[in-house]
Length: 343
Image (cartoon, one colour):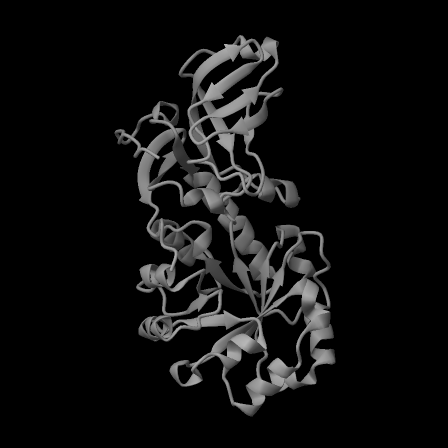
C-alpha cells in the first residue's frame, strides 16, 4: 500500500490522504479509563498485548493509563525486542523451541508459553528462567496431566498458567477453581492464573476469582467485534478513512481502500453513516458497496467514507502510521513500530 501524504497538524481528518488509519485520542482515553476502573474494582493486574496495535506510542499510553499494568504480551521474539526497552516483564504468547530464538529470548529476559508436553520436552530448560503454560478454555477437560508431572519432576519454574477464552459467550466463572480441583498438583507449581482471549468488559466481574491477571488485547481500540460484544458504553475510537473512487451504477459505489488496507479474514468491515450501505466485496485496492439510490445520490467522487474494521488487530499491520485526531483535527502521528515483524 502507498505511504500516506503527510498533512499539517490541525488538518481536518476528512482532508487526510486516503486510505488513512485514524485514532480519536479522547475516545481512546475514555475507553481506557472505563476499562481501568472496571479492572481496579476486581483487583486484576493487566498485561498488554502489543500484537493488537504494534505501536510504542499506544503502549506508552496503556502502561501509564492502567493502574495495575505489569508488562506486555507479544506474539513473537521480534515484537518483544522492539518493546523491550519499555518494560522488563515480557510474555511471548507462543512456544519458542529453536536454540537461536531461545538465545534471543534470554537477551531480553522474556518468557514464553507452551501448550503441550511435546513442546516442553523439546526445550533446553537450562536456557530459561521460567515458562508459562497455556490452556485453551474448551480443552481444560482434556488437559494432559503428564505436563504437570513433567514440570514437577524436572523442577521447571512456572510463571503462570494462561487460560485462553475463544468465545465471548463461554462461561468464565469457576473455570480455574474446577481446574485446581481436578489437578491439585497445581498448588505445587503456581498460584498465578491469567485470563486471555475473548472477554468483554461486562464479563470482568464474572471471571473466576482465582484469576490474578488479565491480558488486554484490542481494547481500548474499538472495532466491530468489540462493539457487538460489549454492553458497556464505549466510544468509537479507530477507523479507516477512504474516498469515493467511482459510482458506476445507481446502487453502487467503489472506494479507494481494499484488502491491502483492510484484512477481511475475520469478517467484512462496516460503513459508518450510510444506513443502507452493505459491503459486497473487496479487491486488493478497492471496496464495492451497495447503497440504496436515495442515499447514493448524496455522494460525489472524492467524498470521504468512514470504515470500521471488524478486527482492528489484523489491520494495524497494514499501515506505517496512525493519524491521531482530537476534535476532528490532526493532532499527531503514531508510528506502527512493529509493522512487519513476524519472527
